[in-house]
Every structure is written in C-alpha cells, then in structure tokens.
Image (cartoon, rainbow, N blue to C red):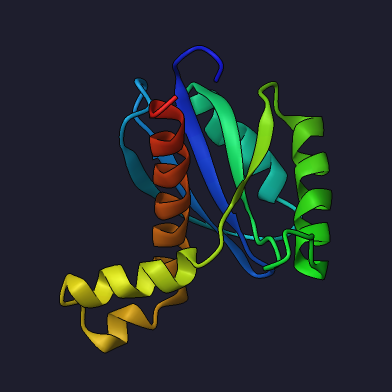
Length: 142
C-alpha cells in the first residue's frame, strides 16, 4: 500500500456514485455523499481528490461468483480508465460484492425507517463506506 494519506472509495452506479473517504491514517471510512453520473462526474472527482488530499482511489468492482467480470464490471473498468486520465493518483478496484445488501442490513440494524432506507443515495454512500472499510481492514492486516 502506498504512503498513508486519504483514500477515496467509490461505489459506481449508472445513475450516481456513492463516495467515502478515509482518515489520513487509513483506519476509518466516512461517507462523503453521492454524485450524479454525467459529463461533470470526472471533473468533480478530480476536484475531490485535490480538495481532500486523496492519495489513492478504490472503486468497487462487482465480480461474478466465478471471479470473472460481468458487463457492469466492464463498464466500471472503462470508468476507471477515464478516471485515471484525469487524476494524479493511483486508481484500484476492490471487490464490492454484497455491499449494497450490507448497507441495507446496516440501516435495518440501526433502526432506520423504511422511507429513509429507500433513498438510493443513502444506500450508495453506505455501500462506498463498506467497500472502503473492507479495503482498509484488509490492508491493515498485512
């Protein structure tokens, strides 16, 4: 893992992306909202990288059960290639299997009302937090 510094976690979706950012020591993941996909997405992400002193980006990759890459995975690979062209930091992928399901479970466990749980942006942001926290914990164990 590169030198410590904030990591930006991205849960990429066709309509919006969920965002999470680590602390500078790479211990805790915090939600950082959502952004709509569209022509301004890459510029906004580049701005976040600069504003928050991000040194690494981790994008959730939905691997298939057999470990292969699905059609959505190919879309995410293309997004990562575009992102690498506009940011000065490494961009990696991380298995995001079940992060949206885990986000829903976390909301249920926390007692969040159904109406709030249905707000898709909340799920996207929580999914980004979960995938980034998994990445952080995996790399702390090494």
